[in-house]
Every structure is written in C-alpha cells, then in structure tokens.
Image (tube, rainbow, N blue to C red; front, side, top):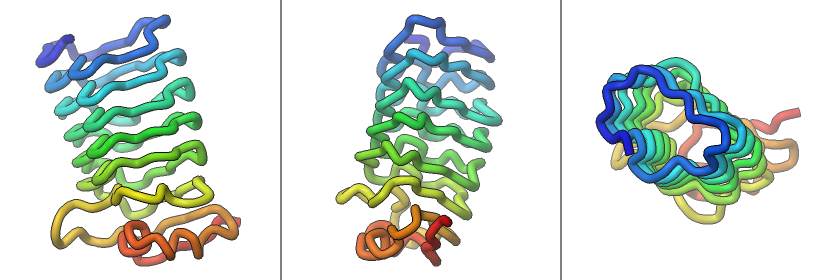
Length: 178
C-alpha cells in the first residue's frame, strides 16, 4: 500500500472495488480523499491514522463493508456520510474521529463492531435501522464514557432500542422520528 505516504490528495480510480488493508494507513499529510461509486469494500485500517483528513467524508452507496479501524484517528473529519447500502461497520471503524458531532446510521446496517464510534464528540445520532444490532457496543469508550445527548430512531422503534443495554445506556434520550 501507500502506508505513511506524503500525498495530500487521493482520488481512488474508478473500477477499484476494494481498498486493501493498511492501504493509506498513517498518511498524515492526506487532507482529501475521493472514493468513487463502485468501491464495495474498505478494508481494515485502510485510512487509520490519517490525521490530516478534514471536512466531509463521503462513502459512496456502493460500499457494503467498512473494516475494523478503517478511519480510526481521523480527527480532522467534521462530517461522515455513510453508504445507504452499508451492511458491516467494523470495530473502532471511526474511533477518535473527534471532529464529528452528528451521525446517521443507514437502515441497511446489520453489524456494528465494538467502539466503532467511540471517542467521537457526538451530540446526536440518527439510526434508521429498525432495531439495533444484537451484540456489540458501538459507543463504548472505556470507563467513564459520557452519554450522547439524543438518539433518533424510526417511528415505533424506541422500545426495542431501550431494551438493548448497549444502546439505551449510551444516550440521555431516545426519540422517535415522525
């Protein structure tokens, strides 16, 4: 891969379906990436430690799987737009992306790994999933993890989120969307 590269901007070429493990890990000078429609898999630690990445991260709708620690420690990101076809979000996938304060989780998500969103400065999360994944604690950031202000869920789904200990204990309130 380009582990530790000095590029400031990267456009993944069209036709690429997989961004490999460690592909751009620790490319600290990287400020911008363009991931084209057609990429399906972003492997583990693909962009881990790319501290210079800033602004909005758009993950195209073709992406179905985000590997473990895929964007961990990308503190310069301020917004993340997840693929509407995303099935799997790995553990620590966005850990310590501390510039992000709001997040929308698409309805398509089936699995979210432990601490996937830990260390973010989230004030609100919108989950479009009809129910949270049955295992894993995506918001846990160690002892003393502070609660996120509000979780918005689909209409009629608040009870199922409140009955899931990992989700109900991570938020001050759970509100149904109209």
